[in-house]
Image (cartoon, rainbow, N blue to C red; front, side, top):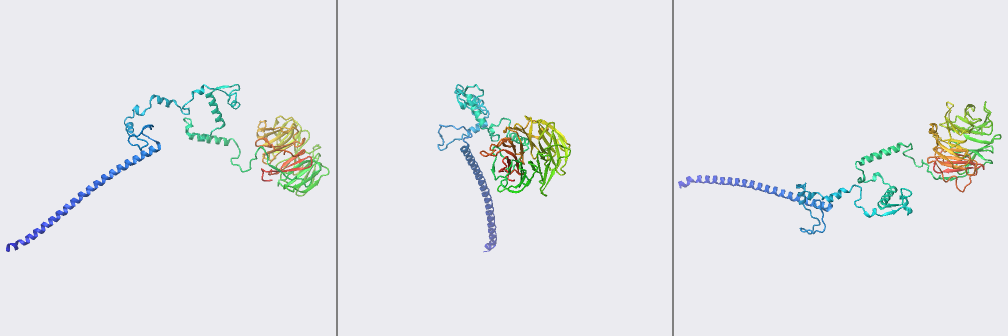
Length: 550
């Protein structure tokens, strides 16, 4: 018992220590085992992911090749027809990948990469723009282009007849290209000549466009209705301007006031009449009788304050519109002219120029009504026209020359022969002074640019010879797009010229209408109305549709 009792605690303590060791060993074994398992799992997952990536890349590569083959055909081996697919009957095309490796490994292999000498010769022989094949029989055929009317246009010489088939085709192509010209911007890149780039073409086109723009002084942006069309004039016949009080004698003058509503008419019945123009009633405002002066000419001053009236007398009249008072002026001091029937008023309303005797031009002030100076031509004076806002005066007459006078220095700036003229009978100048027209006793009208004429170029820009009798009256409208030409010798002897195109309106005078013998004509300040007086005592009124303002 003593032995047992003595050994009892030792055995318990030993067992406890053995149990603790076993427990520690178990824990250590579990830890080492768990570490090995996790490492193995990680390796497996990494290998699986790498395999999956490789499979995915291979599948993507296959899909890409299949897509390329479906869109563009086989890129790695030439397409052959008539051979059945041995490996996979469902596949339409077969990609030979060995050809790719051979291409990479054997770049200098003539059998795989280079064409045969015969094939390469054919490819090199075809140049850009040339036909790939030509019919040899075309050169053996001869065609007579003179025997068929529609083929005669292909001849290069008048006596040319037989040509070869190839030449016939070439001429047809050239004729087609002539009738249907192409545009540079529509040319495909394949038709651009070597060394020529699209940027160069654009630059050339831009340069050419700029040059074309700089060669003209016309407006780049035009308002609607600004340009008058040539060919036919659009107009309407309105009620006669003097329908309320027709004249009993020929009408020698019609003139619009600057307000475009007041029109004066005057003639050999010695009456000066004023009408309010609206195109419908044309109400008469006033009529004044001059007992001692059959009226040859009457005109408003440009500022609208007075009316100058003249006849075949030594004197003339001035009518003040504000005071409604007539003043009789003349005869002029130091002059012996028996007639002051022809005159012109300057654009600045300061000067009246009368046609005098023996080549003299009489200058009279509109304020004092006194003679301020004279100008002398070599021949007789027949017509006058102010220009450059009254600073210059044009004159012509019996010597067939046109004189340009500077009224500030009272000297002749230039004298030139009017082409084809032996006697000038009429002159008129555009409102801006850029153009002037000269009429002759033979019915010829020359249109000049004043700057070129003064600079020494005597050739007119246009010669109008539609009339055959003496030119008695001419008038530019306000924007110088219409020039009216009147001859009093024949019925309907009036023409309207489209100045921008230098052509005559084909529908004027109006067909199937009688204008009688025209005597005078005037445009309203905005060219909306045109009034024409005739020898029957009527003043015909027309509406020009192109112009919106009267």
